[in-house]
Amino acid sequence: MKASSLPLVRVFARNTALIRMAVPVFLEMILSVAMGYVNQFLLSPVPLASNAVAQANQISNMFIVSFSVLSTSSLILLTQLLGKNDTATAKKIYSLSIYLNLVIGIVVAGILSGLAFVVFPLMGVAENVVPLAKLYLLITAPSLVLQALTNVLGSFLRAHKRLTFPTVVAFLTNIINAVVASIFIFGFPDQTIEFKLIGVGIATCASRLVGLAASYIFFKMSINGSLSVKNLKPFPHKLLGRLMGIGLPTAGETLSYQASQLVLAIIINYAVGVLDQNLRTYIITFTSIIYLFAQGTGVAMQVTEGTLLGKGKKDEAARLVQDVGTMARTVSFIMALLITALAYPIFTALMHQAYADPSVNVDNTSLHTIGMMAIFCMLIDVVLDQGRATNLVYVKGLETAGDINFPVACSIVTSWVFTVGVSALLCIVCGLGIYGAFIGAALDECVRAVLFYIRWKKGGWRNKAITKGLGEEKSAE
Image (cartoon, rainbow, N blue to C red; front, side, top):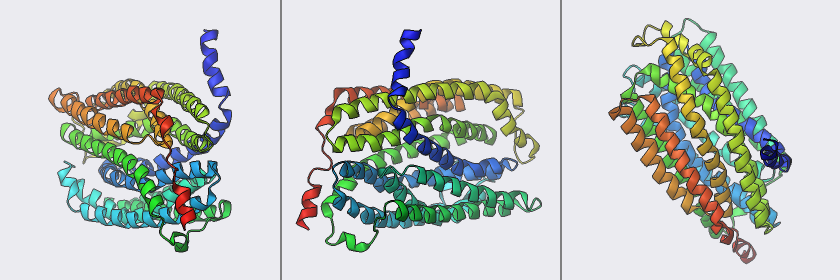
């Protein structure tokens, strides 16, 4: 036992600097996820409103991924350029990314505002939830312009290893959101559901405005970079092409994943009632905390890996990615078991409010049955999160090294085959309800984990050079 555990201890020991970098990223991501779900928890005494927020977030999350086109590619390119000490090209990325993301944010806000009028009936959302979901989406959609700018500023800070600042931003936005939403929900107890939902929407918008302001202040304080349009004269076409070459495939993969999750939500909407839908939402909220360690260490790994690759240290980068994969799986396993052990009291407590609401049909489902359903779903999730931890690390490792197309293609295929196809078969045809959704997702994550691990070990990423030629464009100017 001692001999077998020593290698694992050594993996954590030799990566203590990376773990310290990952802690603020981990906290930031917990807070970011909390931002997405805190309104649902605050509205838990009003299940119809809580479900409306969940349905609206499904649509928003599918489009928010478009903001990652430039934030992801900016992070990857900046880390390697800074590793090569090419600060002149790095400066152009700031202006190019911020203004393009501004345009993307405006387009996304407009599309979502239009979709609010037609999409929810098509999703199979309950008839009494549709007007509430539409109201919430119409209020919050314009604030996605602010979120687009905040995301790209955060990538600049991370690339410069200012990982604590995005955490502070996430903390501020959560505080603003929770305080303002609580005032509207609990400060006016006799008001209508619509009033409470409007208040929650206002809280979301206010918190995103504060997040953007804080991100800009940190950017000017710590990097002192310029966002002037003058940095784009003459226009850096090659740099734009490289940013899009990295960002579009990775965003396309994430968009495909979000779309598959949306289709899965539609399947579940048709297969089960509001009560089971809410239970699944709560379980996903808690399990998202599990994979955030893998995601947080993955982001810190990207910063370090990009710097190593910029310096030509590919062997060190290879060991780094494998170490982070081992750590991510270990922590995910422990956290998944912990939540499984606490599943019964946690989820029965969260679902208890629904039984007091006469507008929700509980179908004679007892709280004990709900608690047991949560335990079985969490047992499936223990397996799911082993695959997801591996995916999150190795896909970031491959993308940072410039091996973009393979993980994108794999993710698109497996998410639709397993998350959608298998889940639909199990949920509807076999009548497994939300169990089927968790089984399909687990198969998706585990198959991808095997494929990505094999791809990394083969080492084709060593032949990629994503910053090659960018300095030539700089000198030509």
